[in-house]
Length: 569
Ligand code: ATP
Ligand code: MG
Ligand code: MG
Ligand code: MG
Image (cartoon, rainbow, N blue to C red; front, side):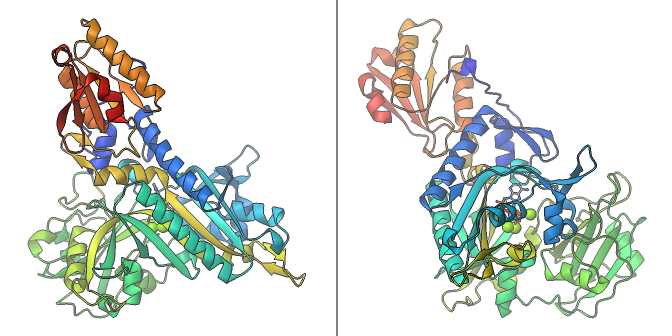
């Protein structure tokens, strides 16, 4: 590829709403452009990386015996009525109508569609097990799309679905998929951990999430330093007594705060003091766009001694609910997560230790400019909560009996489930078994966030100059930077020669043939994160060498002109 034919689109600065490294760098390196909230165009550089992730995932799926299909993005509502998820799924499900007023959804996931396919195509146990995958666009109307493609509304997922006659067979496939996932994340060169996950509302018996470790991760995981034990926070709380956090008896007052804009005003309303140890539950909402936080809940906590739950008023609440504290509001208010309103509300728990810090929280307001600021709401689990968890959990013995527990932030890049027969039963997906009787199939499902992986990889691999791609993911392996190409025939001839030879050797090369100053070309090469740079200049040609620079280490070395191709290979 020649830069002059390419759409490089690098930028010096990232917009101020890009707060994490990968979001900033993907914009600055010209990988993505925002079209609207949670909707992104992939520019050529971004797309090249996305395709690499896709290809590795595809190769490993095929190696694991999973068969590729492609299902429609648009799905008829009827199927969602069959499983009951039309009502249960909540605000993330984007519903649309066709010209005949029939209901459809933009697929956030494909259990319904794939089960519809398999119940028609598969009739006998002899056709089982069957494992199908696709790599495809998903749409989820996320409450708070953020961090660029990390949490987008439209994104690319690899989703696989397996069908079995018996649980035992499902378990075998599940393990096979677990191993395939490990191979994928190993090949991608990511630092990751598989963790035991809560099966939550999907049900089923077993589930693992795969987390890329990163400070910017929205999730928290718990792991043992001496064994493979690792769990996400929800599961860890369910499993280990160490996680019985004192939310079970919370004195909770939920108030409608249309006129309370500050913590002080809220405290006035509640007739409480902003005390030293306060656990705040902030219930945020968007009943209408522009309208803020109809409800704020404060839980007062004196040294983990919480009293009874009292709810005065509560309005529309939807998932995601991550903490027992939040669940308790729902329980107390006798409403179900996701039960109200297509947009709903989100709940987050904040733990803080000092009144001063409390005054720094962002809280909702019904008027512009009245919000309290100073805390990063763009996270599901806040740093305060992590600190709180560390205090409660770190150093405790692992539930597996080996080692002690640590807490880390993670980005969920993959999720596998043993679904059981939930979907197959409600959709009556059965086959004839060996006895010639109808038997409902049992299922597994297996997701990977293809587009999220691109961002997660950048979170783990960047420096002040930009992205640092490994050879597996890099949009180009080599960039050729000719100095003064327009004036020096020797330089342009050698650049063209390398370009042709490397291309012929199957290496992806970017030839920077712009009329730009070398400084600009170097900065772009570093920002985009191309692993290998070849600098060609008259002076070094005089010495029979060219200059090579390694992006990751920053090390430079001279390579003999005739040895360059071998060196790169
Ligand atoms: P999250 O907890 O981050 O909302 P999820 O648990 O809702 O993710 P799954 O239903 O398990 O997601 O989907 C499988 C994978 O798809 C996730 O592990 C994640 O990598 C990816 N994914 C989910 N939602 C998004 C999104 N909004 N943007 C990008 N990738 C996503
Ligand atoms: Mg989600
Ligand atoms: Mg999740
Ligand atoms: Mg998940």
